[in-house]
Length: 508
Image (cartoon, rainbow, N blue to C red; front, side, top):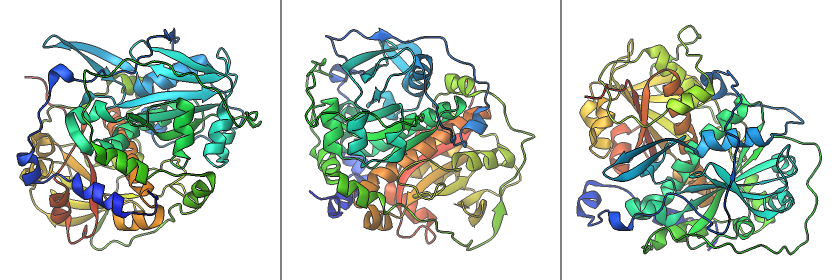
């Protein structure tokens, strides 16, 4: 199935929409006895522990969130690799609930199911040999799957992408279908983008704090990367790459055919239920050759300035109220807010959230830097010096356009799948995208990119909110109802993601 056959993308998107009818008529239930393991385990490969001592960069998280490092000769050592992995996907807290151990990770994830796995390939790094490694989050260690410098293999798969060609470290993120589909069924393929995105938001922020350049790569030959990882593509697939660091020399070439070990893994659960729509969508959005990758990347988004249609309220500027908490401090205390107080946040805080989260994502699909695939619409419930109502964030003009004045707490909750969180939050931020234009330019892979970007920007909202000692949580939604609420301005767009932000309520 070709990436250009966008009917497959539309079919998946429409089939996985939430509506009042679909939610109420779905007979799905959670089979707790069959819940998947939250970790990938190679029983024949005991993990090598990672260093637990981290560099205290002291860099304010609010600054690092929006910072892009451009630096030559930037090579991470083993301690830096450990810090990057742990603060992106590591276990930060453990709790026992109803006899089960619950894991809290550095980045948010739908349902706390953690379907994203991290691997990396590297050249010779200080204190670490070249190889292909898997991050064992449960043991805070790494497993060497294969010895040798496999970066050339990834460079070929990305059609000689320069940031990959000169990266001493390349992180590969995969999505595991069943681990998330156990709860969310076929809609889980959307979650691949969201949950991978929040991890990448942390990874980019930590990289910036350590002064390493980093770039997100969406364009690569899927089959080649999957073959390198030796994953069962009926269960797990490569989703994104992140190039970290910079060295002047290109990696050595590998033989055309490489021999890889087929390591056994522990089954996730007693049985797996298949949701074919996810696999169909992934295959339909796959790129099949380096030539196709080159053509796909040439279609990177062009900057487009939209003129305000109504009153434009500029964002507040200045840093007098900003927090200077470090990246490490913010990530370690981050969590998904479970209850909001209805107290207002300041307009300055909202401005800082919007400014830092949307400052730009270094990615091959977003060119020039700062371009976004998603548009942000807001329901403002309680922000000082800002009227309650619905707004459009004009990113190019750095201001808010008032669409409709009024108190819409009830509507915010209803749109957020009838949950109380967006109703109680100070602001509910909805991500909408023009999927028609995205499909026309990028094919089905554009759908991956839109979901991923929403997850990255959403992850930045998380970090910015916790930097300001606020709370945040990602939510699902009634797709078409959101578009209807923000129309006519949002007419023709599709809902992609939702983040609620406000002051966390104290536990009762």
